[in-house]
Image 1 (cartoon, rainbow, N blue to C red):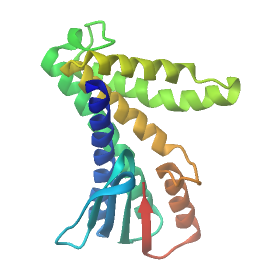
Image 2 (image 1 turned 45 degrees about the horizontal axis):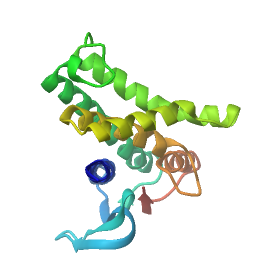
Image 3 (image 1 turned 180 degrees about the vertical axis):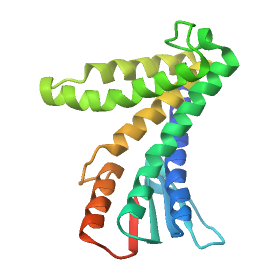
Amino acid sequence: MLAVMIGILVLLGVTVVHETGHWLAVQVKRGRVLRVQIGRGPTLWSHTTSEGTEVVVSLLPFGGMIHYDGVGSGSAQAVVAISGAVANLGFSLAMFAGAVWVVGAEGMPFSDGTEGVLGYAVSSVGTWFWMVPGAVRDLVTTGMALELNRGFRAIVGLLMEGGAADVSYVAAATSSVWAALNLIPVPIVRTDGWLVGRALWRLVRGGRNGSSGVG
């Protein structure tokens, strides 16, 4: 039960980091955030800030959406769309590095104890991020995603261990995977990767300011 609760908190935290990245990018591009949703499904809690932004927390602790206006079409919207994944990768790097700094490389999962702080962090972020496009390739070519399945089992095992280093590793790995998943261009669910491509296409064709949303 404790492992399930930790897993839910990790998913919630990774989602908050992702949506915060979008929010900050909208601010940088001098737009206005209209609504932020954390999670999916029925609303558990909502609040309207003094700036008029509606913040909603939903039942299922994964995925989210930001609606905004005042950001120019094209490259500006592409920056907003990709910023969630960038935030997740930055969070992942910081979590890996911070955990190694506290417990040492020898105390971290899947480490041979010889890597430095930065080396371990960068390598781990890359391993988990590229696991997703590798899984897509394997699904297309073989119909299976064995590496991603092994990664999922490793995460579950670490959650069962429940140590501080284990939980930090799970949070960092999940954040990297979440970044990669969001960058896959899937129009049906309007992933960030799809929105980046659409924004750049509008840049080529020319576009106007308007409202939009990112997941």
